[in-house]
Image (cartoon, rainbow, N blue to C red; front, side, top):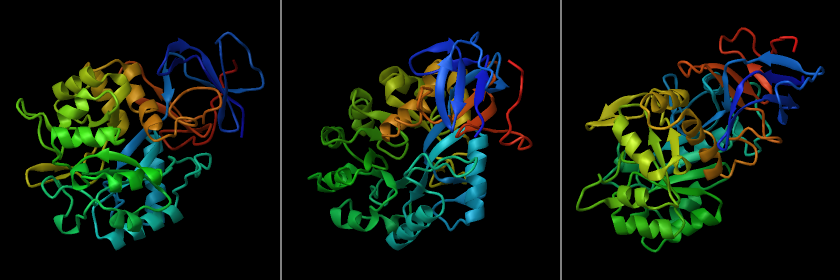
Length: 379
């Protein structure tokens, strides 16, 4: 791989915003240097006047207009989809499977393990988004809050069910903790290295607090598919908003949550304990509720900034560093730091549109015409 220098940009990290140049070699960030420092051996990409952030990370991605992970995608469709995600700024994501027959879920997990899923993040497949693991959104969900999930395939949250489902590649599972009053299934998940997230749940305030005390540290699409926040019964939402240990995932598309609700969540949780997701899929409705979204994660970032919910720096944190840390991936992705993978996004500071994406140290042209090439500026 060529040595590449991102020159002239404003580097955005969770801890600071500064003008600096990023040196890349072998797919890794090797140095962050003052802009006046010369490095004649590097090929330059001029990003003057632009914002440079880590690649975005989406923990809940069901698919898109041409692909659903819970269906039967082809390898060609998957390659096209992962490429499209990278072009849009998402350099890492968890393909998300919703409730289905257990045999069907097992078959899909095995298919993803065979076609592109790789727990070794260093093995990026071409110029496409990384898929380090799977998010199982179900089937151990509340029959009272199923959303789009087919009720006939809902399962108890039990060790017996998990023994059939939890296999290599599964990193995250959305579950209803009230179905597991003794926390035996939860302990099984945790002992197998799977992150548990409360969602599609009718949990009470007490149920949720018990789950958080038992180690649950995440809430799936907060406010959606769960008992609403009520002034006499705050429920699981109230428990999550009040618990500093818990990260709240949210869909900032303006449909699943009103902009004011997004701002409310961020005021209560702060930028450290909020995670942006898309829940992207073939959008629709069922029973008066929403099914998936049609946005990219960069759209959610832009929405939050335009709604003045948080600063650009903090919103990017919610779409990169926070999800990486929640999944234990932060040693390699989610931050601009020496030794991390060179997965980067270059943004226009005026409208916060994605102008350029770098995956594994290689430039992925958003117009698909100069993929893998570096622009020379002569610096």
